[in-house]
Image 1: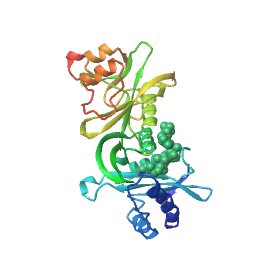
Image 2: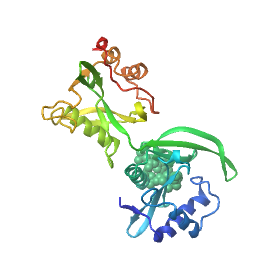
Image 3: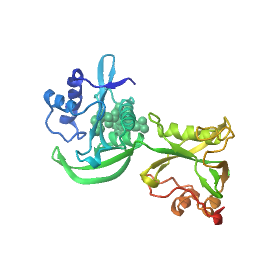
Image 4: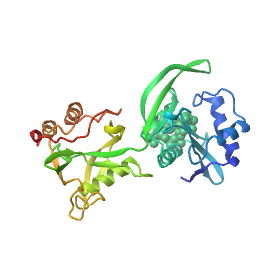
Length: 314
Ligand SMILES: CC(C)(COP(=O)(O)OP(=O)(O)OC[C@H]1O[C@@H](n2cnc3c(N)ncnc32)[C@H](O)[C@@H]1OP(=O)(O)O)[C@@H](O)C(=O)NCCC(=O)NCCS
């Protein structure tokens, strides 16, 4: 869908879409319609190169808009932005909300932001579902912090990491999962396929690309969860099912002409859950959850890399 940066001429449409929610719903906790002058001032504090406002224009009409606003003026919050998305009544249910939110997150990642936050009235089911569908998770709720239409309102705090790493947990029919065995400087360790998400790339696309480069497999992805690696990096994981073998293992940019990873010999290896546990590829609670076939935790879990350099676990 054709998203572009908003200009002053879009402000009447942006204000009209917003004001329809001010008077009719809890999507915004504003209780009085905003004026054009207020929206002009708002656009001025949303420079395209830092906190963009995007509009979706269809046949000359603005049907949806979204913005990335600073979460706080305090410097430590600089990498965190708040997303807002509004779709004109009459244009909903056609994927516009998701398209705008996706566009905002991509733009936010390109601009160097780390985290997108959505502050959603807990009774706003459509917005909650849209955010979860776009990779946000609920980090918590503030209870009875709002009041509109004579009702107390809870606020759901959702967040999404914009500069994810992405990986895949691939299972075969025998219940084994695919790991990359690395040998380097006399150490052996196992890692799940995965790597960095490139700017403008979705975590799904990155997981697929990494898997293809590392193992030569084309996969179908499902949902899984997150974990926090060392140095605060977050890795999004997907459950994956092999569709077909399309190439050779070890063909990505991190691999040399001989197919070996620049950090040592790397070989894809299928492991049973018991082997994952005994080799301590993952922290025990996550290894146990995966062995049981449970979903990966939906909230980020802090853990170290899978590296197991000790000879005892080879
Ligand atoms: C929330 C909003 C932006 C969604 O826009 P939309 O174009 O209708 O949404 P999409 O068609 O892209 O659908 C996005 C997801 O939300 C879900 N959704 C949409 N409308 C829904 C509804 N009425 N009830 C429950 N879920 C709904 C859809 O299931 C969809 O998920 P899926 O694709 O995985 O099924 C739109 O309803 C809106 O503008 N609401 C008022 C403003 C608002 O609440 N903004 C969010 C606060 S910042």
